[in-house]
Image (cartoon, rainbow, N blue to C red; front, top):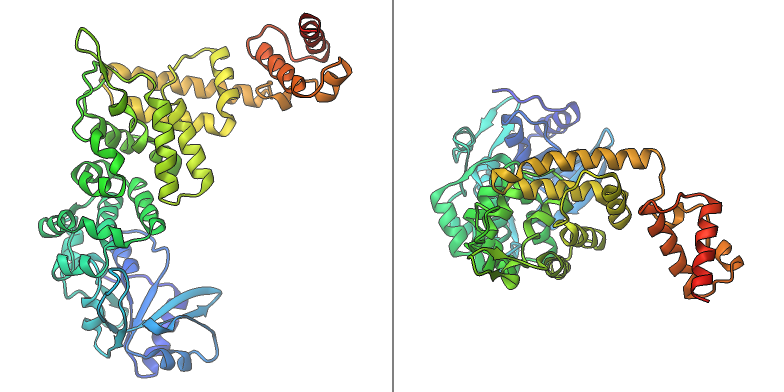
Length: 445
């Protein structure tokens, strides 16, 4: 198979070869090309040392990106291309990075240190594919397989545990038996990984095409990261609307939702408060009163602990807090919900609620259609620029001061005016609002 490589990347390879060195594209770009995907970027590996690379490209901008580990960045046609010397990794003392590296002239040395077979292929337009570890076969068989001993690979760098799970989700692949066993056995090594790297890989896992099976089959790994989910695993909901335990329901809902970070984070955690709220009634039916509020509070703590950005934390917690609103295709209900959660978050909340209901008994599927109709109504309200927040009112705080309101009263009366407009008691006109406000003032002198 021939891989179509961009001109600027080919030029770098040819220039290295004309100087007497080997050079190949390697890793994810080769994998993606075989999968029929356009690679996001191209990495080159070469027998040239960092100093020799710099000398080859003395007519280009060269950035010493990670020269200690053999990587320099060549700026070619305005694009940054990483070029790394063949290397052998030293001992991984911190369970994340090699203490030192040894440069090599042998491509096999470099491929041997890589994480998975599908990422250990190299390609050169003149030489063709170099695949010493069966990566092409594993791509064909849709398998994630470690290069060499999985325990060694994960001991070197525990982040590879989550990377294996992430690739399985993104590519809809199975994780090979020995690799899977090592993941389960070595999950404790994730303690060596920073929260930022964990959250990055977890997000990519959730955003994959097939996160459900990974979340279910590796729930012990997820609970190592998020211990709060342990009570959810296998928890029978004793509820006629639910056909799965709490964690499986959450996993299925993630997969059946929009590819949006806060939506999928919210669905992973939306029922995390249920075990602590569980009550059985006299007929044996399970209830979880208040789980959405408790779940939102738990989710906020979890996401802050994992160092997610503040805006992602706050939005995800809000989506969980309101996910249990009953879908009603009513103009007034939609307008009120828009006012409560805001324009942008309304549509994300609808997506969370859709995912939630797609993971329930089939009797709940009709709610998805209701939510779609609610979204249409919300868009209509927005397009018509109808009043849904205090700033939309035809009066302002200055008008309330003229009526004699002061201090905290001003905010309170404006909120009362908004509630009256949302409940369609009055229209959003200056005269109606001022009359209503004046009556409030007269009622509460």
